[in-house]
Image 1 (cartoon, one colour):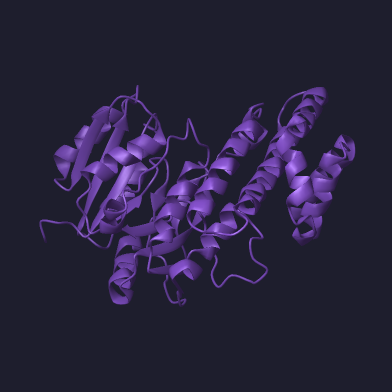
Image 2 (cartoon, one colour):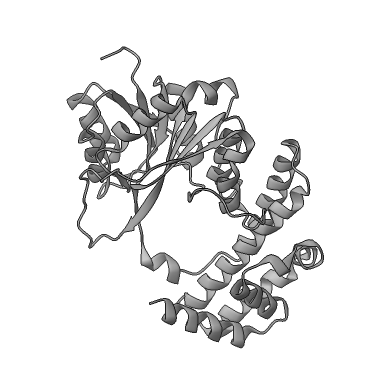
Length: 348
């Protein structure tokens, strides 16, 4: 094994003492052994710091960083500062990876001389059995070159930026990819704080994607995300859309800096998605109807909604999204609530 590992996996750790074992074990059981794991204890107040240290003592490939709590984005940055692998990936400490993730993605990255290999994720609940076993990998992957290669990621961040169909499915999460580390360092790419910029990992994915020569997209659900259904019924933050607009304006400047035409369209596409998300959370939250309506109406007080109405190509939205937007901006709360409920029942 080389002194420089093939892969560095960075795992921010905070208040996950009931889940961290599954996460770490999914790395220990990888079919590819040339890796280092960097556990970043982000000032966790539970048993996590001791658990991390125990794993480090048991396996020399595991490093631990103990730091003052500063959030997920900065914890990942601390991991990047300490990483030495040829490639790097990110894994949240309540999630896990299929055991052939590293073997498959590293082999593709080397074969294709790719700067990034992306994969998909699946959701699991606490009651589900954890299956870390290898996935079958007999489906062909897709390759994107240069600026065209990053378009599937941009379409997740801001849908409908292009009228053509994209050549590969993907996510925009920073956790569902293997990245060439020298490219991260050469371009000084780091995470923003999620406390200052929501969807901060989208920005990381965009920044990295823009400097890639080649991106490989695989269809495999290597990443397993712990889904908490209770989060849908939690009370949404009243300032969520304000934060979404802040991100949208940041995104517009980002896309302008990368030379894209009509960068505000990217921003508005993201904001429309957050409007839908905010309404969905309000409708399913365990709060009085009057409070649901107040959350629904609060978004409309923001001047940015008027900008969307005037400038975004709303006719390109899918029919149901167009209906949802029409009901919202026309303050038809009860009809919007009814339609959403019916759609969710139909999906089940």
